[in-house]
Length: 388
Image (cartoon, rainbow, N blue to C red; front, side, top):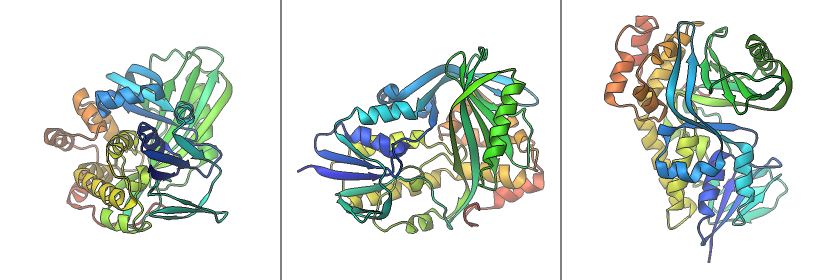
């Protein structure tokens, strides 16, 4: 008899789990999505150093575009960094899901409640499963102290070539508000470019008209004439400053395993979840028995262990939000990008060494010293709740 797995939420983490489980002959996998299609409207990117060669190999069909280097821009300097950078898009992910006969997709299906062995939909119907995995995105938590990375991205079709050599991961030469703002740019063709206005802020409220206007003004400043906006994406990623991860896990439905953002499996500073989602999908698909009780215990332990390892990154987040003065937060990142490329690569991969950590903290910080010391002495255990 086949094991039945119900994946609640058709986002990145659950789609990757579905693709890995589809390789097994003993599993029936169903993706449950409240919207009319899975995968939404997103671009997910990763560096070469984020994944193993084997993980990169099975992700290859999902990659829309790859580049061999990327740029960063700050008021004091500009820099080109070597190393592969890759973009996965919703359309590629959706095509892969739809091409797999072993994956059943039930879209337009809002969920009322989740239980360890079943899902109850808003229309009152119920689906039974051996394992139910909740991957419906980040949720507010009273147990975590969270800031936000807010973004609006638009795919712009230009009237003439943009002349970019590669991605610009951070252009912080733009106006700096109280938070930290930068523009993120991915050139997919000579006249098709993804431009994303991004703001690290204490408030998670998304100013959609304002950020759209920022993109329009940025394109004009680059001398680009926009023929049309092809598509748009938006979102708010959690940036964790502190809290109690075990209390966070107690907030969810008892006995229901989680994935992705809902399991706190993401980089605490960048908010990016793709590398953790890939690793979870890989290892989950290798488990012989797929039942909610076993998966819940395994993923919970995995999340808590990651939390313990990631304390240094939460400290850096407190430096950015609590120590840096408003309007000068970009100086923290400007200093960071002057460091060695291997250190930067390990940082994005979440594998900073003890020497890396010392290098990031020693020297004169671009924040008031007394405020920096206060962040170092703050254990980060207290939680002030999610961002309003």
